Length: 444
Ligand code: NDP
Ligand code: 2IT
Image 1 (tube, protein in one colour):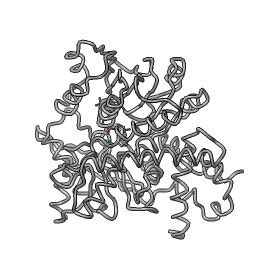
Image 2 (cartoon, helix red, strand yellow):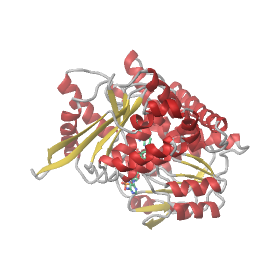
Image 3 (cartoon, helix red, strand yellow):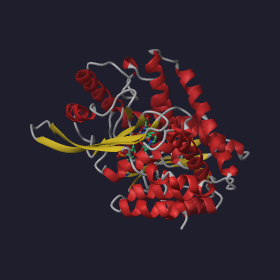
Image 4 (cartoon, rainbow, N blue to C red):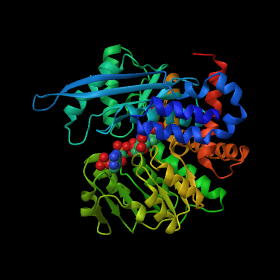
């Protein structure tokens, strides 16, 4: 049996109750076959695949807090420190009721390869809680964040592990967590990224994931002789990534006609009004029905359905496994040319294969949404030198990083005889760097 198959069997046997982690591990290991086959003896002897699929450590803890009625509530907190071969653990904190060990583990695993692709010195980690910030008062969110950080602060630090935002964790949550860390540790240091601009945050971090997604998408279509100008784009989600992806796509001359949240979706044939979307989601924290009420051209639909809209480019920006095989068939039938993932693992393995086999240019999240964490690493650099760079400077660096990622993954795919398979290219390019560092550092 090949080393990849052996390692996959072991991962499946050990993690049977963690479907999202198994999905992520299978996608990565399967696509590493060419490089693993070429180095089989060394990698097997060094147990490289066993080591890279086993986290360095995982923390799971109780998070008690008091709600506005005086009732004590209890959530579970998580932090997984997956791999620090190339730098301190780095990755976001997800606050969503669906969070469990397997979800955090898949996100932490993907983060290893994504962070390596940025070309910056950051290792892979992730965390979060099953706390749901939706419908909570600011005081309740603060109470949760303070309790969460009271425990988390024992495990993180600016040179150890640097968390950031993800689903449900935005500027408000990062602010409360930073305040509590500073109070407990009596230290003013860059322990979190995505901070507010008045206390060490970086310009362009808010926009970075969405903007980065469009920079790599633009480079992809440009290298195939196309441009973003005049393209119809469908986007899912209505959060941080979706909003700034929509904004940048429009700046590039494309028309974005959809967005969605967990209850429904919008079709707006005149193009999404970003200012209104930002007001509804970032200021009012309301549902998309509010958007539809105020925008004459918009249709609101309950449930899911953005992938049924005819488009040139599709950008899933909400959550994992939101684009399945039936959606992929519809996109292909409608003539979609490219799918680039703003979210983490939004496309199922079956749907990814279908899109690739039917000639759709497909860039997975580890490459396509790396702009967020890359800009977090730029925030860490600014914190270390106690300086702040201009928006233009950070944005220019972000763009260069995304263009470089495209060419690195394209080149890696070609080198291993799989031209155009950007999923394989990304996994191999990320893995090569981490594997080299792990082998150099011995059995640790
Ligand atoms: P936000 O919390 O800002 O927005 C998430 C959006 O997705 C919301 O519109 C939300 O709807 C929707 N959504 C979330 N969960 C579900 C679900 N289970 N079913 C349907 N819709 C859902 O998060 P982000 O925009 O930051 O994150 C979106 C994706 O991008 C995630 O996969 C995240 O891991 C990934 N990502 C984020 C980065 C960042 O810098 N923020 C960087 C790289 C990747 P509702 O409000 O109704 O819940
Ligand atoms: O999935 C991701 O890359 C993020 N949520 C961003 C992580 C970070 O540290 O900025």
